[in-house]
Length: 248
Image 1: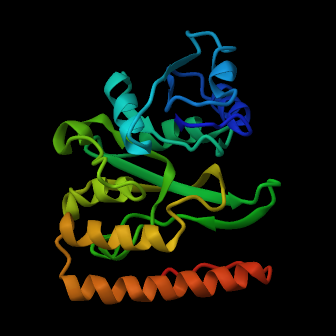
Image 2 (image 1 turned 30 degrees about the vertical axis):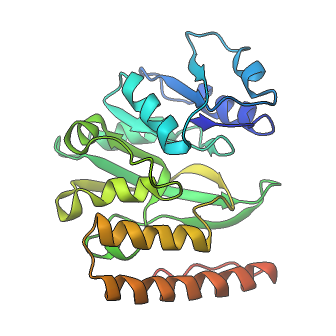
């Protein structure tokens, strides 16, 4: 979990990790970017045997994630925002799901329940990873998805030149060789909004798809225009109290 001035939400987020029904081994790592509010004070209330945390200036969320990945000891790595909450059974569901899979699987995604600031449901987001459709846009629900540590040994760490869609750019590196699986369950209650859910995020994804994914420039450009149009229409309907998502 990367944090910065997260005092309003971090307690609930941490409780969602601590109160998991899974009784196996897992570690909670929080990388704080030098918060000026009470985030660090809240982190300090937890025993270091329960939560590992560091607080220092960083170069954004992907720099923080890289720090967390480098000190992690687990076989699988999961990211959750400081304003998101893991469903209580998430880790147990994943552990059971892993037992049904081929050992070569490198990435497992699930679903997110998008909620507003009052915790009210908006919609469910997240589909299985598909190539080449993934080259068009980020269709998987990244918060709460599982990354094998083998991915970081093979493809390196997150590119901090990307400030919004570094998670998308990282998964593009494997192209059609990514060995993925999809667990058809909700694992995270995710707060609506965020920098990835913006027009700026769409156009940074355009850059990732052309530079890393090697998608033809004009094809990617017109695809991004289409996604931008969907975003504007979705935003207008959202203001009217109507929620929907157009995958294709």
